[in-house]
Length: 190
Length: 190
Picture 1 (tube, each protein chain N blue to C red):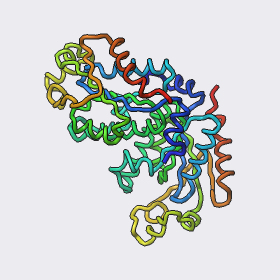
Picture 2 (picture 1 turned 180 degrees about the vertical axis):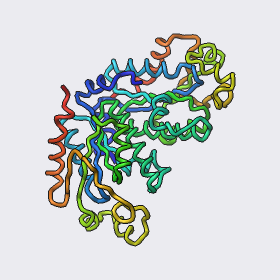
Picture 3 (picture 1 turned 135 degrees about the horizontal axis):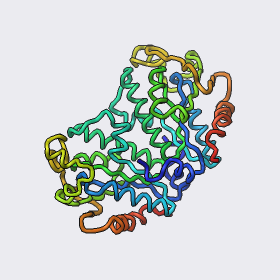
Picture 4 (picture 1 turned 90 degrees about the horizontal axis):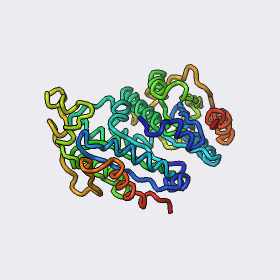
């Protein structure tokens, strides 16, 4: 239902579009990595877009909360928007806790397995909590935030991620370069 | 919250992004016009995207029906997606019945008045019904489709559209050129 097909759009942008899906605990480093990867890709002439909880929950998903149903709906919509994006040839970096296999499978099914690269940011909860850059873990431990992944709500490790990155033992520079090296062959225009 | 600002994205695409919002009755010619305009713009080097009821209701809005609340939610989400699109520098053509001033104002407020060009496709209901290219008016008259704009549900004319086009007395070629002439000065990169 595009006036220009996805492949025509990809040709215009001289790239192949995929969705790079970063999943992990709050504070694991997903969004920082997504931003660094997007900057590097853009400097190399690729056209990309970031979707994350902040962007969507302040906009299209402002009607949703954090119980498991709303989390699933949050991810369903994120995946549908990602699908529109790759239909336009745009490389899309998604940074979402997306805490369960069921929820991540919703995304994968909507986007399509061939276009869905799952990267598990495996930083341990102790490290995420020690960082606690925005004070959310502290609030969650006090019980002020219900349904907080890793504290009062489940986080299931992905079963077969395409890549695993633990940001506790590395630098953002090295981690982002690992992702770049992995995805460059996938997005290169042929 | 973009890694690259909208103006940087617009610079990459050498265009200024706006939302061109086509409103009108079912069968008025909105989507046909949107596709022709998008094709012409793309041939001229502009990067654009179409959003319409088909695209969204088969994807992100598959959970919505056609009562007035669901129509408003359909349009709210369309507007939020459009906003993400123009945040990426992409010219976005929206083709939605969007039947009431209230509903169109939701879209205008989300997108922002300066980025929202409202085009009223004013083709009279008799002409739309005589066309009835997909047989929906016939079904609506039989009562098989509840809440059908122009038959069993209200359609309010826009109060201050930027442009009015009645497709019953013209050709798709001429009508689309009128829209192109109107928007070219708005999307040209300066």
